[in-house]
Image 1 (cartoon, rainbow, N blue to C red):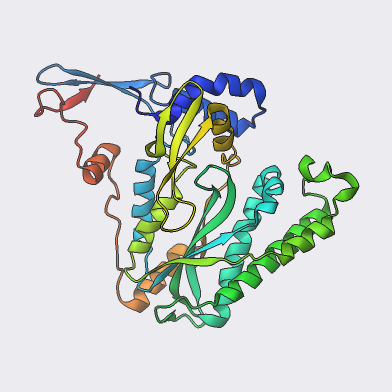
Image 2: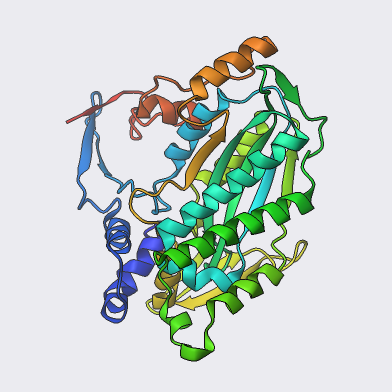
Amino acid sequence: MNDLKIQQVWNYSYADFSEHHLQSREQFKTSHAILNCKTGILGATISQCSDCGHIEYHNNSCSNRNCPNCQAVKKESWVDKRRSEVIGSPYFHVVFTLPHELNPLLYHNQKLLYGLLHKCSAETLLSADKKYLVATPGIIQVLHTWNQTLACHVHMHCIISGGGITPDGKIRKSKGKFFIPVFVLRDKFKGKFLYHLNALHQSGVLTVPPSFSGQGEFFCWNTFKDSLYQKDWCPYIKETFNGFGNAIEYLGRYTHKVAISNSRIISVTDTHTTFSAHGRKPGDSRRTITLGNEEFIRRFLMHVLPTGFQKVRYYGFLNNRMKSKNLKLIFKLQGYQKFKQRYIGLGMVDLIKQIWKKDICCCPQCGHSAMRLL
């Protein structure tokens, strides 16, 4: 039985889906990557035991960032690199969520508005810090566009350090609690996003989708904008970390996550897919959801990001241009570097052996001889 469950959905129903739905170039590319992943179409490696002669065939994976079969090693490597950038301060997990009324607009302006969400989330945290922390923290942001049912739910996960560099080159830390009042985050974030959204509309670069413009005289941009100002955009502080490196390990769950993993898919038939999801409210038991295969594919492909779009971005003292210089200063001022990379310089074979304790070079037949590539 094929254990790449998501691939089964595409094998059953992608041809029918393609007849009924238009796809972007990125969605088409992702679909064919999922169809071909570990099938042999993308090539394979062949190895043979130097002792017993046993031969192993390993089909190549697609490495597409939207494929749930290909994220494990990337995630571990990312977490390992970030570990060496952790400073000695508390860390906090903040989530900014956009109102669902914006979903059609977001989908038709993905690169533009997802980029705006990154910008406004970072500016909100950094501008508030000038008053409440009086230092520049380090921020890692990860964009997610889905909820547990694969519907559109656009939100930004932000890990922010509770310490940073002051304007006079010193270190300042919070006292353990999140240092920015939630109402300040709410008002600043909503104000910034809607200000820039309106500016984009006024300049004519914003694509208004048919679901809006189709309302003809009944649609008014100013009325729509005012309704968004009336909504509660309240962000929330999801977690507080005092274990330093735990924050990065935690964020690793989000960085290389795709809309659904194979482990959540319970069953696949030629017409329907059933998967598990969290309960509707905290404390509720898990639930099962069944979708027609074409609807499952449609929902999954909604979350394929434009080519080249960076869903993970860095701000504050982790800004890519100044990160090395800033971290060198922080580690010097605090007198130590808390964590270092564990897997630096390791190849794929050694990386798998270190993380998953699996020696892929050891013959699975005789168990004691090395496999060599043919």
